Image (cartoon, rainbow, N blue to C red):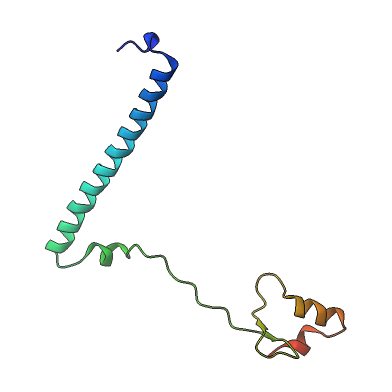
Length: 102
């Protein structure tokens, strides 16, 4: 194949096709490797997820509330992230974070 004789459109199409073929090849290779590893793990009495720790990310637990709105106890803040408006307003009014602590 003489690449110098191809037009720009043909070169771009060829590039797109080659990129897709590479990705497809990598996906097939990974799937084959996974199947072989799963079969080997099953032969030893395990699942692949047991051996490699699974594929689900660990979930982060909710932060415990440290501060409570003085007039509306349903509104709380853990002390993480952006300060809520009620917390900023209370601090501006002269309260301390200890006054708002649960």
